[in-house]
Amino acid sequence: MHDKRFELFLKKCTRQKVEKGLIPVLEHVSKLGIQVDLQELFQRFTFDVVGLLVFGVDSNRLSVELPLIPHEKAFDDMEEAVFIRCLMPKSYWKLLKWLQIGEEKKLKEAWEIFDRFLYQSISAAREKLISRSKSPLEEEEEFTVLNAFLADQGGQTDYTCENSNKILRDHAFSLVAAGRDTLSACLTWFFWFVATNPSIETKILEEIKEKLQENGKLRIFSTEELNSLVYLHATLCETLRLYPPVPFNHKTALEADVLPSGHQIPQNTKMLISFYSMGRMHEIWGQDCLEFKPERWITKQGRIMHVPSYKFSAFNAGPRSCLGKEMSFIQMKIIAVALIWNYRLQLVEGHPVTPKNSVTLHMKYGLKVKVTRRFG
Image (cartoon, rainbow, N blue to C red; front, top):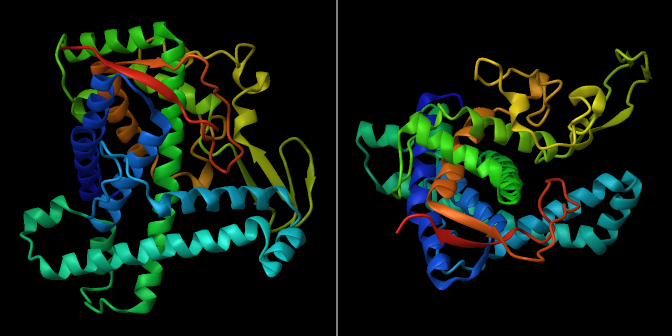
């Protein structure tokens, strides 16, 4: 993930999907005057981008037709079942698994559907890799996870190796889980805050006009341009503070320990860490902790304030910090500015907004909006 070629390919894929996927859908719903679920669009967007990054294959889930995809439903079912496991005693869900009833039966069926999708994608990507001769430039532009994996094998071309397929499948699943849901969840809550706080939208638009010297025309900005948008970055951080995509985590003590608070932790103790609660604690963020206040992230000099990861834990902390943190900000900024600069988003009146019980902090009913163009 820290390879420069991977970063360049990520930027290329994200921008390409904005131009050829997201913008056409928004243009379509804008012309028809119909409502659209932003959360669903973001999930389709991130799923397509992950497919490009891992396999070099675009599944085109984000298109005007918004096609129904079986493996998407399967992934959602898996998330729900895993969340329920977190709430149940281990012996209970293991019994359900043995009996193959309830959520455990649903989980098994969902795994089979999603596994088929992953292995089919791996096979298609391998065939594409074999059949297409690339120039060095093309290889650099398409630095997929599959290419990197095969390179790590020392140039071996055993494309039918069951073990390598299994390893690649595991990597692919991890990237889908990390990339699809966390990014889409953060963007959904971000646009809810923007839509319900007109002053924030105004400040972001003013920053774009001031920093990028832009005014009055439809366009997509480069990642280099977006780096100067301090208030935008602060707004994303504030969204992550109040609505972290992964709202909780749990750890097990490998050996006995003592916390800084003095609490004794026996060996094998399971601890639940609520990032959602941490972002709303007076002791950590002050008396205004429940306010949505991007300014708390900006120094007097107008720069982004450094906040230690043990305080701002949306990307975890320590050795297990999220490897994709910087990549996530790149993608979120490209998408956020493309939408805010080019379109007005209005929440559908009466649409309920509430968190969903899940390992990822989605909105239970999505985020329904109406879209209109800013420029003719």
